[in-house]
Amino acid sequence: MRYIRIPMERVGVLIGPEGEIKKKIEQITKIKLCINSESGEITFNEQELSDPFKMFIIENIIRAIGRGFSPENAFLLLNEDMDLFIFDIHDYVGKRPTHVQRLKSRVIGSEGKTKRVLEELTESKISIYGHTIAIIGSIFNIDITKKAVDKLLSGSKHATVYRFVEGSMKKLRLEGGF
Image (spheres, rainbow, N blue to C red):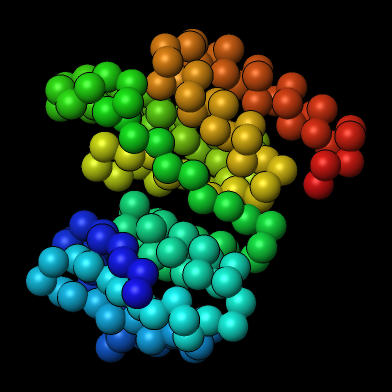
């Protein structure tokens, strides 16, 4: 039995209106999800899977929804070229709420500019939720996005990070990475 816990306020999003998101995950993966609405615990039996890679995909979709992504964005992970990465801001500044908020604000930027620019340049999706920053991106682009977010969390200037991303994406295109 596999077990994942997501925040209580995200359980409704995972289930969806009239259970449609849960049903869609079950149809696509052929696995029955057991969702405990009281605790936020999701379990499924990995023995039901014919393809062990699907277990990884199911877990990533559930984690992505739990980390603030819309189900539509989480379903991008059904593509085997897509991956999920989650930063814990506590790893950068400890658990002080003011420091966590400051770093979240650095990644969001003024009126959402930084987040939007990173998403556009890297063709990735970014979700900032609680004390985490999650990224969904292609296996080619996600490393660049991860490095950019790490640089922001570590205190690099926004302009420096934008130049890094633009240069890295240009280099990736020239090398035929995507």
